[in-house]
Amino acid sequence: MIYPGQLLKEKQIYAGKEMGQNFLSNPETARMIVDRTGIDRHTRVLEIGPGLGALTIPIAKITRHLTVVEKDRRLIPLLTQVLESHEIDWVRVVNQDFLKTDIAALAQGQKLVVMGNLPYNISSQILFQLIRARDSVGSAFLMFQKELADRILATPGNKAYSRLSAVSQYAADIRRLVNIGPGAFFPKPAVDSTVLSFDFFSSRSFSPDMEQQLFTVIKAAFSKRRKSLKNSLVGPDLGLDKPTIAQALKSADIAPERRAETLSVKEFETLTRAVEPFLIKE
Ligand SMILES: C[S@@+](CC[C@H](N)C(=O)[O-])C[C@H]1O[C@@H](n2cnc3c(N)ncnc32)[C@H](O)[C@@H]1O
Image 1: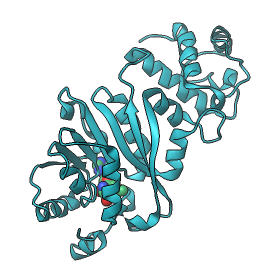
Image 2: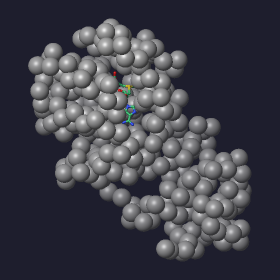
Image 3: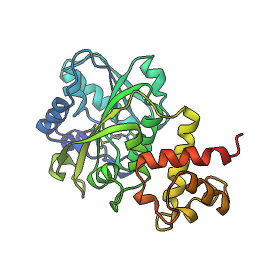
Image 4: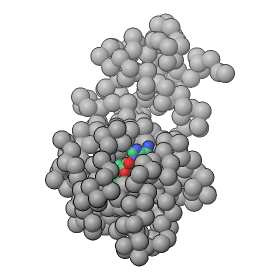
């Protein structure tokens, strides 16, 4: 492996904070992450932000069905050079912002496994994007800042339980795969990292419309997380007044004094069913 620091220096490219560029510089760590995903030669993989190919190389050595999406145009010739040095010519390299990538179009009716050491500044947005596109995504193995990974895994009653936890746990079975210290990266980040695995549920309890309502209810409830539900749910997200919210909470059998951070995903689903008849349909 050519070390990221050396390669970037040679080409006079500076790792950019705005693109969350902390490259894995330890090939053993990269290989260990890919090994733990359990992919095989039939797996169709989509990698987010390949950078200089730290994960791309071990993935490409397992499967030839690999597309990578990298936003930074400056890195494309370096990535191509790294792939060539490993005599790998079967990776489809797309120079694009992943947030603007049509995942269903890439999947072409088959399920993808998504992988990535994510740019930390947009990792929540990427996770929401994958959840919305999960008809095309069977599972995902994603590296986050450890603190964010802890929030995704947090359960009700825990201070870290948030909108992201509830929405993610509604959509997938989530597990911690491995924690990784700053020493495995160039440049070294100030924080620890965690790889999570997401096994997206194939059956859904809600239609796409109802699911959208559920996400709105969760967003509204957490938008004022210190307030009780009877107050936090009133406002622009749902467009409902106090008496209507009180009625919906009563029919969902949820005490109006409770706060969002105490509600299980199942309770959010029940609440959504209770709120839905009052919502104005466009
Ligand atoms: C944390 S680095 C990981 C690089 C490489 N996978 C590794 O592990 O060494 C994040 C990568 O995502 C790229 N990136 C940042 N924003 C992106 C976006 N919106 N779409 C696609 N790639 C992006 C960065 O340029 C960088 O290559």
